[in-house]
Image (cartoon, rainbow, N blue to C red; front, top):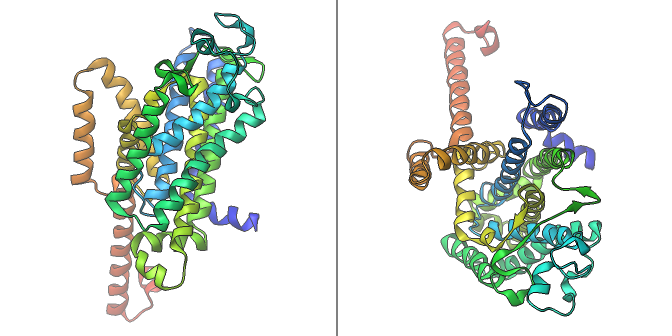
Length: 387
């Protein structure tokens, strides 16, 4: 069963992308750690961490593509799942600081000491254990997605109404996490991390491992999503996107199909957030901002939704452009982003990868039609006519 799932997932373009990601996971850390700083081929640690952040964003865009590109659910709240995964990792990293904090309390994080908390809240217990924290990275976003999806999909909320509700969800979490009495650091969030599983989080070697982990996790999730969309379940998923009422009429429980896909996508977003936090060194309520979730939609649309590869390319290209333009033209970046989205909508409605695929398919169809016409003229089969 697992073998069949993997074989279905390994399309040509998926194999190439996974190979590239695995190569990047080895090459970039090697160029950072094994080359001298004055070498032309040396990649600085800050640049590697920046590229690692792009890979986390690419994983988040891939998670959105699973529900939007293949199930037709335009979620404007995936930033919430990303942030929750990030907070789970941040809580683990905060527990690792111990007595090395500003106030020297071995149990309470610095912000709790500053706010005169007397004991560790119940929901912080267990986060000093790495496996427990990693389970929470998956469980918390997955649980929120399950509860939200259970009520929304069974109520048959669709289209723009569902999108608005998802954005309301992330905005509500933004307001909640800003409160100091929530126990998550309030406006300042969680920062000043020291170690991750015993290694200095600022060390070059640790950052290289985090980068490699981001690339490999993106490759693994790409394999997972490709297996899902190329399975029989994936065919039904596309049917739900294109003709939900017909799929329901055929006897499928559409709400269960949507719920499963939404939960898997939320878990992937949580993993992206967990890998993001130790590389940027902070997590705060700003990650819940609705604008962040809208940006994810832009990345996916630019790359091409419903293609799996497109959102990865879109996320990397848009964020690389953002890093450049916010430094070179800080006042114009938001206009450039809006113009990019409008331009893609007007001239590349299927995104970069989707447009390339469409033109490639049209070219093959045109060639096949020409060969068929030639075969009719010569009275030979199509294959012989081509020869």
